[in-house]
Length: 381
Ligand SMILES: [Zn+2]
Image (cartoon, rainbow, N blue to C red; front, side):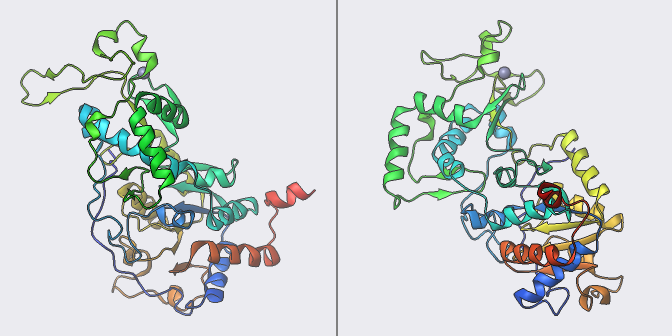
């Protein structure tokens, strides 16, 4: 089973590879060489690529949790088993949603889309739940490793619908919270902290009073009706507690629990998604990691797999990356000469702004490495 779990230890960053890539033009050349000398490269992206869109990263620039030290993400089991945890989650998510909904793709997302259109990139596997790669180019082949914030799924009947609809339902059930949200919009100085999964913290707020609806499809199913109690407005009431025989645990696992499709911490990544991500790795000659420290195991193991299959690795990330010595070092623990002294074609390790480096690389490649597989060329004809 593959769980999404946070990994808190900071990673030590390595010097740039090739070691000559200390300036932006040198970094651009190295990335262009990396992409030009591969048949196809898979992009693996993390929170770092969305920072320029105004979304927070889990980590500060040096790989530590500097942005919001008190933040502890909700775990899947808490959400599934706890009505109180769900109230707290949806309250924070309700307040944080507008900040996510209004976010636009940045130069980094646009450059990735252009690299795909140009035939250098085969597609994207992303850890991000913000839909920004798709917003940049709806046709870009993408595997959302950790799901999406913008879609709601019922954990019982698997019915899905857009988060914007759910936001309206939450608004209707929580008029005083809606007024509070409107005040937040008008007064940007209110102390709030936005978190990477799209929720926010507001000091001193009673989350227990927040109301959320159960799945309407399940609620209409006579087999479940009794087990999904609701109030007069259709908001979920705390479900009856069930004590399993032989277990001290009290569960409140009710049918019809709605959840964003994003993979919570402590939740397993679906096998079909895992398989698709592995297939994309296996089909590419190289993997280019953008804005990820590979802190989550589900992402790290994909790069390890690429490495084991002899594929090239490239990294553009501010701060260290989990286990990256293993990408570059020989048995004696020294960085291999072909990475240190090469021109980037065998591997790159850079700490530059993703948008700047990739935009530069696109320009170089368009001048020097036109491809038959280019979708840009196909469009122009
Ligand atoms: Zn349902």
